[in-house]
Length: 243
Image 1 (cartoon, rainbow, N blue to C red):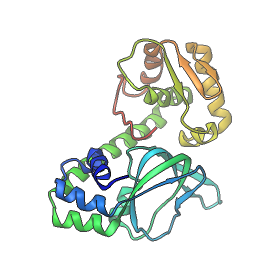
Image 2: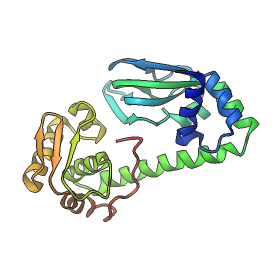
Image 3: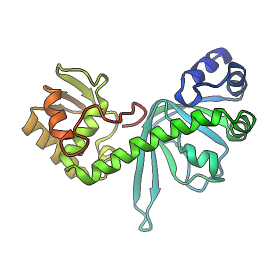
Image 4: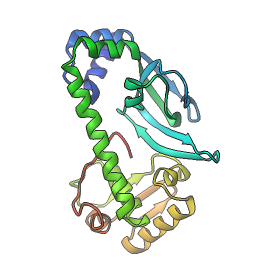
C-alpha cells in the first residue's frame, strides 16, 4: 500500500475522524500493514504494548484464560475496530490475548507515536473519547441483553447485527462470519445451546440453515421476537465494528 493510500484509509476510520491531514500523514508514514492467517496470535495477555492494532478485514478473537485454564472469549472484532484500545492508551501490557479467528489484516501504529500525537494535539482526544464511548455503549447494551434475553433471542440479536441494512423488509440471506463454536463462546453459551437456539429459530420463525448460510424470511418477525425482551426497538445501538 502506498503512503498516500494508507493516509486516506486511516483518515476514513472512525478513530481518526477530525485528525488534521498533516497529522495523518505522519501517522501513516509509521504505520505497518500486515495480513495473518487464522490461528495467528497477534499479541498475548501480559505482552508489552508496542503498537495500536486496527483490524482492516477479517475477524479477531479477544480472550483470557480463567483460573481453571479455560478460555473465556471477551469479544470477536472486525474492521474497522481497534484492538483493546483502552489497554493501548493506558496500560503497559495487554490485558487479553488477540488471535486471528478468520484471515485478517491490520494497520499497526507505534503506540508511543500515537500517545505523543494526542499529547501534542489534546483536542483530538475528544474524538477518541467519543469513539470509545460508542464501543462502551454497544458492550453495555449487549450485557443488558444477556441478562434480559433468552438464549434464542440472544442468537436472534446476533443475526440482526449481521443484517447490512436494518431497514430491509424482504428476506435476508446471511453468512455466519466465523466458526459456530466461537460464535457460541462469543454469545456466552455452550455450542450445543447455540445449536438448539438456531433450531428453535428455524422452527418458530422459518429461518433456513445450510452450513454457514442462513435465510431469514421475515426480518420483522425476528425483530419482534428478539427485541421484545430488550430495547423493544430495532435497530438499537448497532455497531458494524463487531458482531
